[in-house]
Length: 372
Image (cartoon, rainbow, N blue to C red):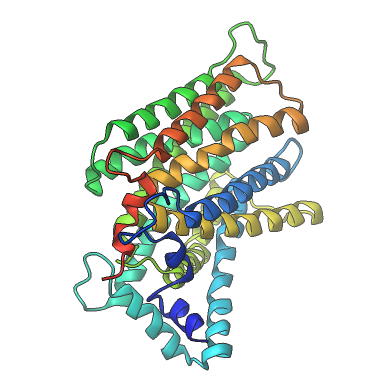
């Protein structure tokens, strides 16, 4: 009971205990088990969600990106009543007690002036959701235009933008190992995306070009979302309670502010509104559930391991998606995919290598977790 209370109050979470950088011993613990577990869950959810979206938005299917996004992101709101029910059952919390827990954790957020803490949290979540929605909508728009392997490769080039924004906004130290890791990964992405000039494609070239444009746009917005979250919504001691609560607020704000674009897109002809059939609705429900798992675990990974580690870690989805394209959709991959995938693994290995002072990227991001 005492351990559960600590988890809910956000003072010393179980994940913190696993992922904390130790200054008192165990110098060989270079890789955080916390970050590895979270990223594995995020990778699995991302791959499954991508395949589900490709099914629902495939030819002669329910190709309505904004509606799918609205349902998928709106489902995040279910975390709020579930989280409160847990606190109610275990700790007999009233609504005031529950929001008091959130407020106490949010007091440690950067830039907090001690006044209107929860309103500040809502304002920052609105900004976070704007970046998140821009990136996700761009991704949904590109799903039906380019192969999933290519989309995943370009989307995950966000590690370049993430590192750039981390240096500018998070005062990230410029380190040769990290620069090499980022550029090796980006080189791998370029190799995977490199089209064979002798390859004949039946795809509409203009549609593919638009798909590439949306994919690049998505990678930029996602990088901004990751860095903004780390800078403004991660307290001194990262908390599972607050992270999941922010995820639920993303769902609530999506349900509230996502309705006007549905009418706007319908009347302008950009995306006509339709009720999905039973099969499409079932797949959309799967997309929503997988998206909830991915976003919740990925936000925790950003909080505990930092945006750069999370961004490059999620790049491991690229060779997985290329393999699934080959086995499930019959999309052949050539030497460029093999070389690019190896480059991505090499870049991730560079990131995990200890620096001369014995730290990895993930460990440096975890410094604030050390108990005083």
